[in-house]
Length: 470
Image (cartoon, rainbow, N blue to C red):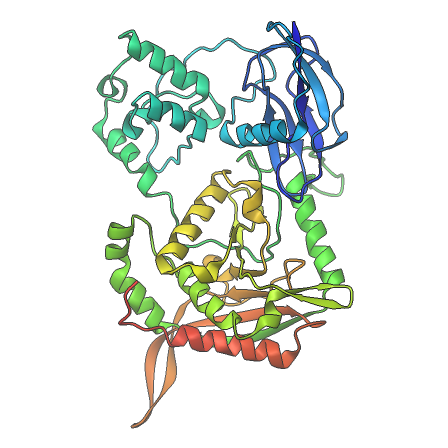
């Protein structure tokens, strides 16, 4: 027999400890390698920690709600392998493996070891965004299973996801000649056609929230849990306790208001050129680049060009010192399906062309909505852009994402009659108009700088070249 140490994984460069939320196994239970043992949480990410070996969970060293340093041993697994004077594994490599596995595979959430039983295949509804973990995709690739074939495999994981056990069972049946072909599993051709469109229709036109902050990555896509419902005698009132993510959002919002004296400036931009150019090229762009062109990468390209002329908006405050950041890392405020929000970051956005920005925006947005963001994807932002117009708002007064000193909000694009100045005189025309708002930290950014920066962004939007290529 040999004892294998399970250590608290490292889930990001700045994360030094994690809180144990739940144990899925108890001491004495049999565990399999890669099977989820516990769920942990930090101020950046919630994740599941898998077993690094098969055997018996010998002992558990920390309880639920304990705060455990990264690299600390949290449990021992007794294996059938003979111990041959093997040294204790160093915490850093094991932590790295655990962190990768926790992100790569999200197994079914049953707290007990239930023998695998394949479910009956069902037709998936059109528009279903089926998620495959990197581990499942790697197995499919090594076994020669195409994506279209993968879509027909019934899943026993959370929300019908295909787990490692599902695909290995399918591979075993296929090698033995006992698997069913896609045609016999999915009879209606309409369902097949819908499934084949899943991976090309995952991107949405835009995404936003009103009050973005760097927040933990939710690893479950379930709605906010109603932990307590109470009926008050004075009337019917539903009391819902905040989930952990909502509590962090509330704390960050209050902390930001206490930290920075907020000032908000407003500007109006004629974005007709942007609208017409996007409408002209969007079909060819998607066909050639295999990704959609939304307004967000167009906004970011214009934004970073102006930010280089106003370095103080890309800074932070440390006591009485101003730290000006040379990297332009743009956070995109993204609303999640459960009402919470996340701010994935495009690093060195000024180094990317419009195609690169489009792919980065769409990939991060899709990963955010499907709970596939990595911890580092939400860190290191130096400036935040939020699209409050997604849900119809004309403008907003966003809260600064600490420790940044400014945040830009873009409102809904509306057609309006406006006065157009020409060499021949003034005229009235129908134009695509949008309001911009910039909230900034008055400790560092004064009104003259904030207003000048915002006006420059509006001009950059208005001067978009309708004849440019991408």
